[in-house]
Each structure stands twice: as C-alpha cells, then as structure tokens.
Length: 212
Image (cartoon, rainbow, N blue to C red; front, side, top):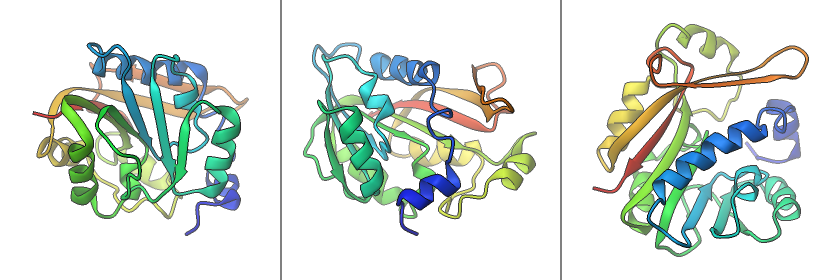
C-alpha cells in the first residue's frame, strides 16, 4: 500500500486532532529525558509523518525526520522548514549518525523486519543514547476492542506488550515504560492519558530504552 494522500484521508482523517499539543508535550518530555546530558542533541524521528513532533522541539535540537510518504514529507517541510526531512522506507535510515535520540511513534507495528530495523537503530545511536517508541498492543482487557477498531491494513504486528518489551529488550536496556489510553471522542476531543499504575491494561504503550 502507498502511504499517499488517500491513505491518510482514509485511515487517519483526523490526524491533526489525534496529535494535539499535550500529546506532543508528553513525547517531548521523553526526548528531553533521553537527552538530559546533551547540550545540542541530534534526534531522528522514524515515520515522522507531518512533522508535528519535530516542530514542537526547541532550536537546541538538530532534527531529522524520515517517512515513506511523499505526501507526508511535503506537509512536514511546510510545517517545520528548519528540520532535515527525507522520503525513505523506515528500514533505510538515510541520515548518518550518530544520534542522541531516535523516536518511532506508532511505526514499529508497520515494519515487517523488526530485528533488522532495531539493529540499524542501534548502529547509529551514540553509546547509552535513547530510543523511544510507542506501539498499540492487543492484549489485556482492551485487546479485543483494539483488534475490532484497528482497520489499518499496514499493521503487520498485532502483538502483546510483552512481545515489544522482550523484542526491543534484546537490543536495548528498557529504562521505563508507560501505558497510554487514547481515543478520539465524539465532538473531536482527543483523550490521551498516560499511566504507569495501569500500564498492563492500556491499548498502547510508550517505552524509553537505551543502548547497554
């Protein structure tokens, strides 16, 4: 499937509403924690789409974004002209490292060759650098509902949270992880609740990992 305008209009017609500022602020806090000791950190956003997250970062960041969609990258360049963007499959990172932080928000579930992409990410990170990812999970109390609601045919991995923690944990040290409850409610309000206490029951997880 092509990740063109029709893909976004069909699968994510409310993309902007599903990525409000408070959601970007949470992602930004994770990135700041991952790069706490870096004065001018370099960050790569894999599957950056329209560049909402990268555009929310302060000028101290050297920002890079890749996405498989020409349409999305065109929008991203308009939104964040100070960011270096490239059209690229997620398995081809294009930009040279090393990076202090790499993020993949709702991307890994689309990539068939997980071990390959995780190895590529590890290869371009600085020692002890941070890798942040968010994925939907299909286990727990919300699992059946998530499977029913998920109509995206490009989701090739519909896995439990333990799958992701173990698979990524084979290459990285898991520092912390959170549960996320998220849903676009009637009226256009996007619910985005982050929890550590109930992280085993949420429909998505966010994880901060580092190179060993």
